[in-house]
Amino acid sequence: LSKKAAEDIFSAFTQAESSTTRKYGGTGLGLAISSKLVDLMGGMLSVDSQEGIGSTFYFELDLEKVKASESAPKEEEEIAPLKSPSSYHILVVEDNLTNQKLVSAYLRRLNHTFDIAHHGKEALELFDLKSYDLILMDENMPILNGIATAHEIRKREREKDLKHTPIIALTANAMAGDRERFLAEGMDEYLAKPVGKKALSEMIQKVLS
Picture (cartoon, rainbow, N blue to C red):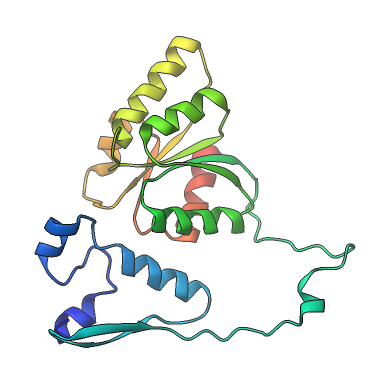
């Protein structure tokens, strides 16, 4: 990496070269999300790099050592997650494994239960089998994208006289006018990636309040 690229590499949507995107795909979110995960654990992700030679990414975490006998809680003890005002059952539709892990970690901390679909077709199969309070829908997916999946969900709700299930779009390319565009396509709100825990919690409560 060049010195300039190393300074910007942890920013969302930033890659060292545009050719990287053309060759390997993606939107430059991986390191931004990794940095957020390390930050959540109290550390900081850093890089040492020599252009044309290679890069080393590293972080340090200050973790408490727990004895084996102390690792399991006593029967009468309770481990309380960071609770949101209400707990919901949520369908997460996301094809990127890193984004799945990030959103899953947030939802567990907020005391929500959830299922994960890797693309729109799988989401529709789960939607037919289960009832969800909310759907978090990635916009850009293989097989069936987020907007096409939202259209099909709204169609099934009309045809089967089902309750309206709120859909929050997740987009890696947030632009002016996106909210209006997603609302016109049958969704209820949207969040830009990488998603933060506070923003996700507030949006869930806003949509379901």
